[in-house]
Image 1 (cartoon, rainbow, N blue to C red):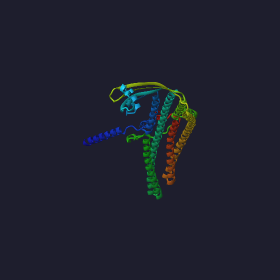
Image 2: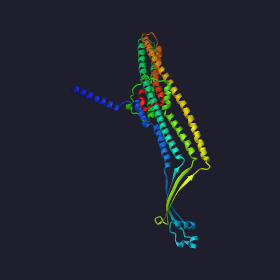
Image 3: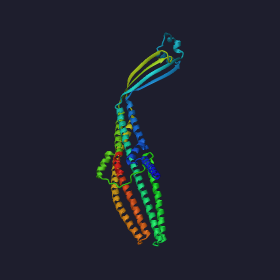
Image 4: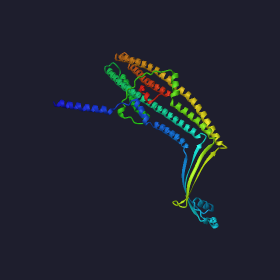
Amino acid sequence: MRTSLRACLVFLFLSICWVVGIAQQGPPLSLRQAVKLSLEENPGRRMAQADVDSAGVGTRLARTALLPSLFFTQTATRSNDPVYVFGTRLRQQRFQQSDFALNSLNRPPPINNFVSRLSGNWMAFDSWHTQFEIQRADLLAKGASAAAARSDEEIIHQVVESYQSVLLAIRHADLTDQEVQTAEALLRSGETRVAAGLAVDADRLTASANLAERQQEQIAARGGVEIAWAELEAAIGDAIPEQQRQLQPLVERQFDLAALANYVTTAIKSRSDRQSLGLEQDAQSKAVKSAKSAFGPQVSALGAWETERESIAGAGGNNWLAGAELRLDILPAGKRETLAAARIGLRKLQAMTDSADQRIKLDVTRAYYEHQAAGKMLGVARASTDQAEESLRILKDRYDAGLTTITDVLRAEDAQRQSRTNYWRAVSQNALSYANLRFATGTLTADSVEDLQ
């Protein structure tokens, strides 16, 4: 009875530990989750957002030219200059009959003057220069947003690459584990055959050396897994908890391809960097119009109101001024150079747009045929793996029957190991090349990465 109770308590304790372990383990990190985290934590995203915010400030700054300027000034002066004293007493409205005495006019005593002035001006018309600058700033802000969208795509692409590297590294580490187990079994078989007199001691030594080599590869593969995780963390911009590192294994996937021309057309329309460049070109067109408008007339209104007192809190006089100003640049040499520079900038952006279209077409074409090649290489690698495994099985049976040497078995194992490694590399490259095609066409988004996992 006591033994049964003890067994029940042990079983209950183990069950609780298992449940707690499962609860602490948490779900594995999916590719979509990794992309979402990267768009929240990656420093590159924050830098791109800073550019967007800066462009937004530029749009608001351009609109401030529509507002009037208003200033307040307070000055305090003291002088015995006859003209200064005469004018100051007049503005302070403290002029008296005695101030006309010749001695007072020629040698007046010093006088204080405290002036409070409120002044302003407003550009009523500047030949639409401000409107063109506002339109230009708006286009640059849209261009910055498009550039930030492309930055997001680059971050997503980097995460996809790093995630695939982790999956491939884990697969490679699993392969090395299997190879170590196979090498250990081969060593045990060799020792048994040597002990039975069916093989020479050289077979045991060869199998032992083979095991050591496989163990070295296993150690390197485990290190490769940690490096791949570190690269993924760098791409995300944050650490990945241990309980989320149990990923779904790398599996073979097939992707449907459309015609190359469709991808090129999609890229020209969808690529955010191409949209950003087009918006910059439109903004530069507005800059040319703005430079032209600078030759036109400007009409501004101005006004001022001020008080002048002998003391800061004393009584005094006040006056106001209002007026309008027409300004026309008679010798606009600098404005001509500004217009010439704006036109040069526009020609440069037009050339950059043409160059970008050619580069995008090349990127899409390269990614398209690389993915086609990756799919064909995957088929070849799959067939090669099947052949290598069958060849190894036959040679092991022949070795156990004493019909072949251990050297032939090891050679077959090398071929099988290489074929399996090539296969999983081909699986990873097939998915990665498809991601590259999506990235080249500008359609690699956070919502479209699920089919890559």
